[in-house]
Length: 453
Image 1: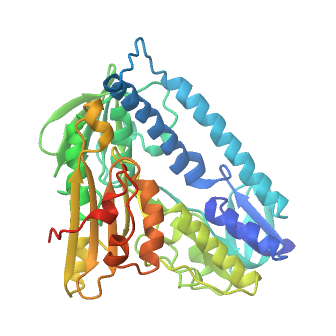
Image 2: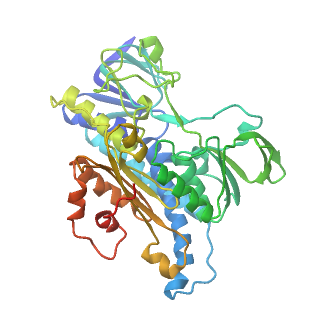
């Protein structure tokens, strides 16, 4: 029996759901939002934010190694894993509190419970059994780590969820995967001192990224001491007295402390009552939506990773905002998914926006490539063996910059601003007439003159 009615019921309080709820409430809608775990979603609780904090920890290790070349002598330095975990937990709790406070300040009612559809316009709050009728329902439940193919001993492995809360630092770890999460955790664990092995089935990491970025990052990872094994997969995991024995598909065996599966993420749609309500899902169990985030059922929308479009936090936030403005604010707009910048916090990090060289060539027409690899100034005194990569993909006929790809320190910061230029349709001539800031790595973007292809 329906107990009450609301204008909007949001299932999932991640970045996309919270933004949608807040904006809808600010437009005057009566909003109820349910979250079964913690407010903030994957990004805040067990994704982008804690990951970046761990990356910073690893970079301090690099800084300590580099300091000697600049005249600093540091002795008796120790790293305490549990201190990092505790301080990370404090920051995540603080951010979660801010998310809740901002939602409630906007007039959103937040309930800590799983919520399940009982029809195209009704939702049950599982913890209390209350059934609520809603004019609109927004599915914003995000995703969860994929387990991958079933293998003996798979239950002994961890995912990124557990990696943030390990009780002891893994001095030896094997990571399986080739995407963002795999290369990021491989890099950060190596920087913190672990022996790291990275295995993946294909011949390249970071599927869909520019080929030069893929190859250059593998070179850097191997230079850092990561054991990179392409064309390989886990066959079995066996429990040992002090760790695990891992059997690989090529017949090799390794002794490690932890095995981490980083095989992508799947949409959180199971058990939500979507099928019973008539909501169409695709082969990956993602909610099928149109450009305005509408599902196959009138009044039911979905945003963020649960739609499996572009699974990035800022994209989910914009989708949630566009939904709320369109449905409740009388200001219809849609998110442009065609030109989204992204960063990979590998070691070194990557920033990229626009077309890869491969995609540009596949589209036809003449393509000009400007590429530069160089040793960053900091490394000349630190002695660190690393090289940066910068690359521009340019339309050979119009001179328009189609893509910018950077690998090296500061790549994520640089690509945010480069995305503005690419989004405005900047040409290579626009880059060329921009006066360089010297001495910086970023100046290479405006000083490359010779075509490499």
